[in-house]
Amino acid sequence: MKKQSTIFIIVILLLMLIGCQEQNEPSTDAPLDNFFANTELNYGEYVFIFEDVVARAKAMDLADKTLEKWVIRALGDEKLSNKRDLTPDEALKIAKKNQTENQAWITVAEEKYEVKVTEEELDQWISAGPDQSDIPQQKAFADALKLSIVELNHEFDRELYKQALSWEKLIPVLEKKYETNDQEVLLDKYMEQVEQEKKSK
Image 1 (cartoon, rainbow, N blue to C red):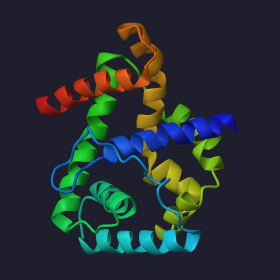
Image 2: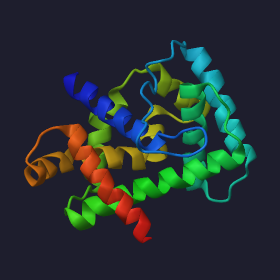
Image 3: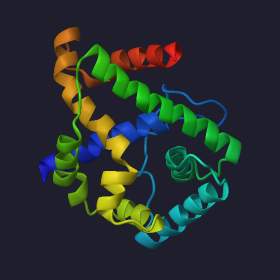
Image 4: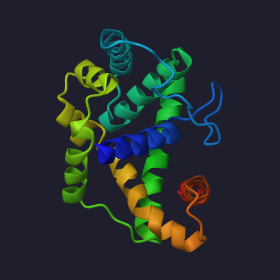
């Protein structure tokens, strides 16, 4: 149970990280402090919100279905955290930024630190943690997408969990490099490198 809790905290940290944005300009300096915690909604209310979010993303009729997933996340993050509906242009801008950041995160881990996540170990990690969750928001999100929890975790949100697992594997490497176990410091240092990677593309 402790492992499942730890995994969820890591994933939420990463969801906050990649979902952080201000109304006018995305920023990695102001994470969503209360991604799920600041809302006291029941399962049905979450389903209602997520179904609307999914419908609005689908209405954008994006040919790139991977980008569509990031649009859904951007719309959902904003709705839950600020109770505001992003315009399609805002959602697309944030989605592209977050997708690029996710890709840069993995690239830095693999190329600079030789920290890689295999498909097999990722499936095992998801099965041992997120698949065991009974969080109402997760169930509501899966239902809104017409997916099972396993499909949500292993397919729809796979790249988020890959990012989370890569961070878990990066921590001891970064602790040794920077001679600190302060994860906020480590995250700041790592994000500087992610930003450099994004700029190089």
